Image (cartoon, rainbow, N blue to C red; front, side, top):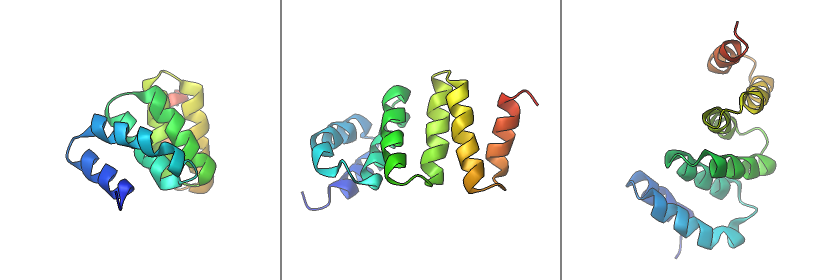
Length: 115
């Protein structure tokens, strides 16, 4: 397969989420240091409502590129879907460190803090 990440993105766009995850699991050893790959995997798991695995992959993506705003936001949402309010607030703080003007993140933080 010449462009496996492109293939995974197409599978996700076509609604073939489980197939994309299965392909990704096969490819993971080769792409363990690839931020984009980890983000794709986290996104696929998030779409199929497997927040626990989504968090794991978003964390791997963030370990490779700590300032990825989209990964931070999706990881925040995954934590929230798992009922992990404190972890979500930590992610929101990281978003706001990178972009203090992110109104969406600030509004969510205010909501979680009961402001």
